[in-house]
Length: 580
Ligand code: NAP
Image (cartoon, rainbow, N blue to C red; front, side):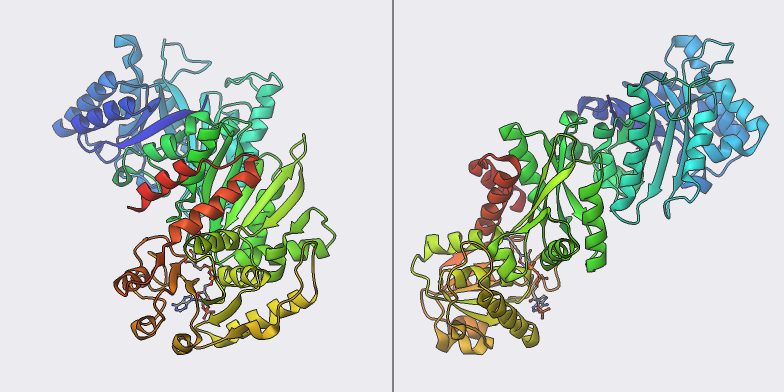
């Protein structure tokens, strides 16, 4: 079982004990006392008192604990002499004899351990190991951290730790440069898992390399995957902070997220992985909604935010690596800004290279943008079908038609991925479409490409093309004379964290001159009350915020991935609560 460990920076031992109790009450299995902010290693009365207070903290710990006094060189706070922290470890280890309440583990950096025979001997005095003569219970975690990148000597470090007889658990942590850096850690953990499954002993000493339990974590914004999926790969533990301001490493999730959003306790080797690919993606409510839905219908899956930088090369490399990773078991992706067109491009390029697993639905084909990938796998876990779908446009149209069933002509603001799919979908319904975009050239490209795709008559179920004049680029100021039945914002204007969070996608002039009864819809859902929605409401125009579209597209994705209907009431509740 992968343990859930709450790390606690000890600045005041009383507070650290209170935090440890809170960690226990909120479901942690183990705590790590990071004593380096408190312990300075001086040989005076203050130093002695601090040692005694740490001994008392460990003795009173409500959970098994790891004690770590991390030096500055490895990203910690301790800049005293090594001998002093080794003496602290030895004092703590010796508590086993006194009252049996010694630390379960001490964590010592591999670099420190190897630095001299003297230091190694001192560490070994504090822990249980094959040559230990005293009845000690504390075990040794050897660790290596890199706060910049994946260390070039990672494999050597792992082998060195494996071969140290006193080492019981290995820890490697490095800053991920992309999502792909998580995959190498999964490979490492899988190798250990396979060795254990083959019956190789898991203890130190004479055991073969590759058999000791491993903590393998990626740090930083790309590292969440490694932290949440630790139980899928039988990692020894993962860390979660009590609160955001208590994190001890970059990218560490908080306890409630891990237990409630990601349902950490239900993740096992068989859990299928899903996620939302975008940039930025941390504001997405999709993880909350889909994870709640998986739990409600009993689907063995977990859904994560997957940040991928905006360039196509990043998207391609990451998505192909995630699909083809032999043990990740990726079941599907939501794809959001700015990658919707990239998904279609990737499917087309891979198909052209001979990969017949990809298929595009009519809307993705016509619009050149898609928001969904559904992956079918065979019994061996190989991806056999990669279905690219657009669920945005049907969801937006359903929301609009619920308010205005007689839509004849619509204005779309924007010419990106969402705008393209909507234009294609409206055309299939023989609705007239006006495109308004900041960069007119991009809007003209959209029109040209959509008309070309329509005239190619692609795919089964393709409707006969609509007259070309039913699709055109216009300026926003023309809208009042064109009398659209609906105006739909498909730009990120008004979106929290976007390029213009306080800007409206339509100027007040234009909005005021729209005909009464024109429906104003926004794709942006965070916040629900965008400047556009607020202004349209003041003008007493019927409004549809981004939530209806969000729920519709998410429900369709959920069904594609799970073969079950989405629990709509739950989706609505979870999404509304997180947006208010
Ligand atoms: P995209 O492909 O990046 O396209 C963005 C479009 O917005 C482009 O046409 C761009 O114009 C325009 N734009 C960007 N910044 C602008 C600015 N500062 N001023 C004026 N125009 C600007 O994005 P997308 O994937 O289509 O998504 C668009 C929005 O819809 C996002 O906010 C997304 O979150 C939202 N959305 C919501 C849902 C939902 O479920 N509710 C579903 C899909 C999308 P240029 O051509 O001039 O660059």
